[in-house]
Length: 87
Image 1 (tube, rainbow, N blue to C red):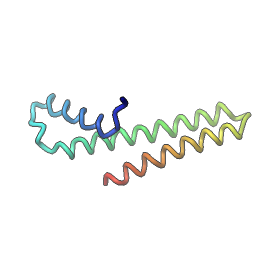
Image 2: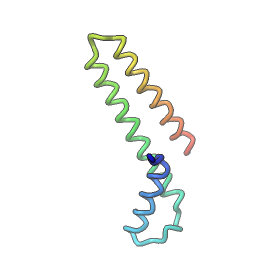
Image 3: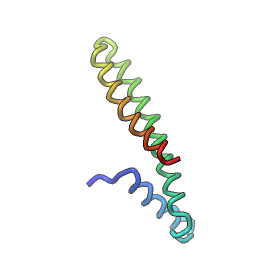
């Protein structure tokens, strides 16, 4: 089963606490939030980059390029909503 972004962030936060030798009880939510936000920012940037590449590669087929760009845009909107709700 695939992990959610939050589950990945919490696992990474636990690993960071372990590496630093600090108790996982020290600000676990704040550390996981920061990691999750970083993941979402990277995903947004990469989705945009992929959309631009797809648009360039499909330049002869404008309809296909617009469909790909729209799909990527929808994913970006969901990611931005998740990021905004964390603030």
